[in-house]
Image (cartoon, rainbow, N blue to C red; front, side, top):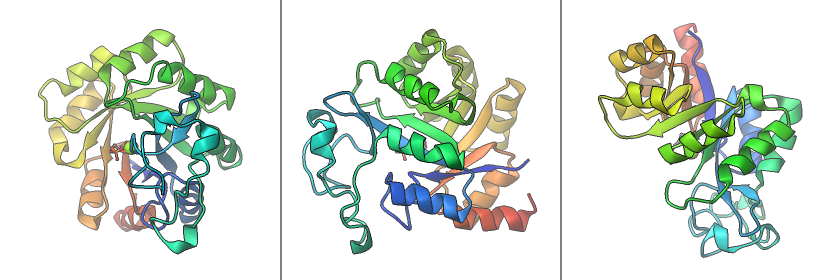
Length: 244
Ligand code: G3P
Ligand code: MG
């Protein structure tokens, strides 16, 4: 099986994570898809940033949810990575979806609603995906199982996946109960048995975040459906070497 390579937060080693340059570079390097994280602004605009706060990846402070998008876009989300990316702004989900109209990469849109439960984030994100006709090449993932139940009630045709870093014997059962298509597991949870049990139950397995040739190869050899990596170029070379 050809394991799908998602650039985790874009090509996040070469460029600042979750920015348009990181997505563009992932495309140029040949990644199959982009993984990104969504939070909501004060005016309910879905924006692409991993943390709930601005401190780590921008020159701002405070919570994303306390700023309107017009205020947020004044912050520099690139300089923390390197001077080359000075003045790069926090993108919106619209920016990514519009950019992907021509590229047609696979998209993994992760709702970052495990710490802050942004009301309505599920519907807002599903509507955006629908608006850009990306239902067929997108998956929505989250660590928040309540949110997955909410999405399944909304009856969109967009696949969902349960994200987890916790070892649990009932993971496959939980996935089935949540109505998801996939289990997005942390690398340390990977086992041949889990992948096989998932397949038997019509669930796929994807693994985050793998950046070393050995772990990337192990994910691929275990026939995982997809992986998330900060270094998509490395993952592509491993896949080529394995003859996948
Ligand atoms: O979606 C896979 C991975 O991104 C989940 O963890 O913290 O990197 O968003 P995190
Ligand atoms: Mg993520």
